[in-house]
Image (cartoon, rainbow, N blue to C red):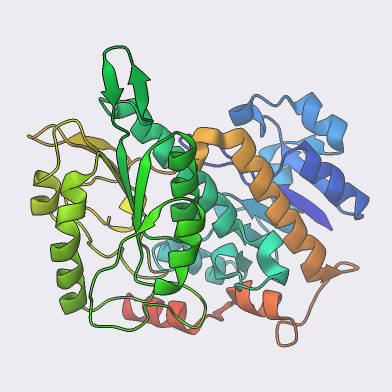
Length: 378
């Protein structure tokens, strides 16, 4: 099979294929054809990609010949022009919020494979691009906060006295939250964390952080798939009122709460942000899907009248694009290795991974919730 990749928009520095992944794909018997200049966001020359086994061709030829086209972000409909019917478009497709892309996949009879739909299982972990990128986002969130906060993170004993450690509060203890906790602890901060799922408390404590508990009137906030469940408006209000005190004591707050397919829940309102000390930093990892924080702006940094920095920068993994690309390319390569046998896609009805990620096929949307969203927006 011929594997190619579609160029990403200018603000996105991550690549779907890097030399190590190209080498693995060619060893598996696939041919890799990439558009000239594909590696430029990471300063990879065409010669570097060719040395790994890729054939460098024009963008038009790369599209026209591809059996599998890899993407980092949901491609604009015009970016799919030139792909032949039946081509697999594999990567982040954000189907609930990129309906024009889904429509273009359907109209072009392209077979979209959405990595956000990867099942949460031990076996699928090596293909779980959402988790690999979320981990990097948690790391970058702490680094960005450390750059902007007006105090040091670790405790320091100096001849002039002892400097207290910065207090970091992480809201949401999924993959991103756990990495944020670990990074902040490595930098010496005092870390508190909260999640609606009490089952993660032991994970928080194992990293040396304190798990904060609030009474929301529910016994467990976890779905069958292991994600945090969506809260009702009443539960969200109880959550906001109880966490305002912890937020006010914090120098850095990192919010990570997202529910796939829905706008991000609003966790921190203006009153909570207004109670923070001037110079404090809030990093909203959910800014691109509506934001956990009132006042956050996707892709921007906002400073409130009280001098609190609210960061809605996105995508954070692009800040560490070299490692993010290597991880993402490995995830996609493992998916290709798993999903195809001798160039034939495994039966979606029999394979859990293929059945989960295959979003569009033969001019139809297979995912019921996405199909309903499209019909509602027709």
